[in-house]
Length: 306
Image (cartoon, rainbow, N blue to C red; front, side, top):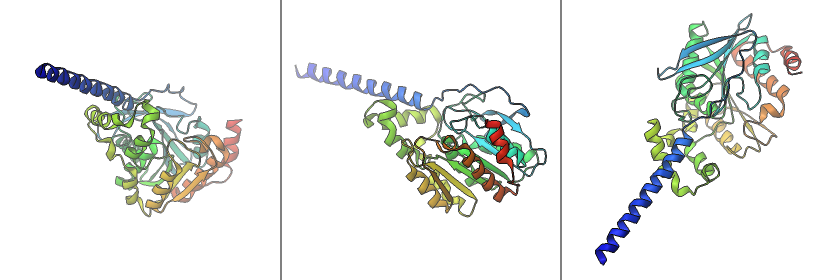
C-alpha cells in the first residue's frame, strides 16, 4: 500500500513538473517572439539599405533619408513589435523629414526579428544593441564619425547599452526606456501572462535556453552610468503604466542627463501627445550636440502633418 501511494505521489509530482515546464516554455516562447509589424511603403526621397549587425548574427533592413546639406546623422530605433516609421507609437516620417530639413540625415532601422530584418529571438536589448552598433558602422562608412540616436522603449534600452560601448554615438535620446528588465517583468508578469509569479523563474530559465541570454542581465541602468558627460535626453510619459516614470528618473540620474517628462498617459506617449513640441525638442537637442541648424524646420513638419 505504501509503495503504491509512493508511486502515485511520484507520478503526480512528475506530471506537475512537466506541466510547470510546459507552461513556462509557452510563456518563454511568447516573451521572446516579436509580432512582426508590416513595414510601410518606401517613402519618397528615401533609399532602402541593408547591412549586418555588428555581431554578424543578423542582417538589418533600413531606410536612409539623406539631407541635401549634411551636417550629421541620426538613427531611429523602434521598440518591441514595431518597425521603421513607427518608432514612437505614431508615424514618424514627418519627424524624420524635419530633421533632414535641418541638415541631419536619418537612418530608420528594423531591429532583428522585426519588420523585414532577419529572424531572431527577442533579448530586450542584450543582442539588439548590436543592431544599433551595426547602424553606427554603416553611417561611419558613409563618412559620419559622430552620430545621434533617437530611440524608444526596448530600442531605447538597446541604444543605452550600445552607447556605453560606442563613443561614436555622440547624442542620444532615450524615450520610455526600462531601467532593469528583471524588475520590469516582475511588475508586469501577471498582466502579460495571466499567471502567478510562481511561473516567472521557470519562464526566464527557458527564455535563456531559447535565446542564449540571461534576460535578467538586461539592465540599461548599469550601462547608463558609463554615459556620464555624454549628451543624453531621457524622455518619458508621466502616466506610463507599463514602464513607470521612476525608471526614467533613475536612468537620467545615473547619467546626469537631461530629463523631459510629459503630461501624457501611455507608454511612448510623448510624441503622440504633442508632435510639434516633440519635434522641436529633438531639433533643439540634436542641433546643440550635432551642430545643425534649428531654424524654420518645424513649419515643414506642420505642412507634412497637415
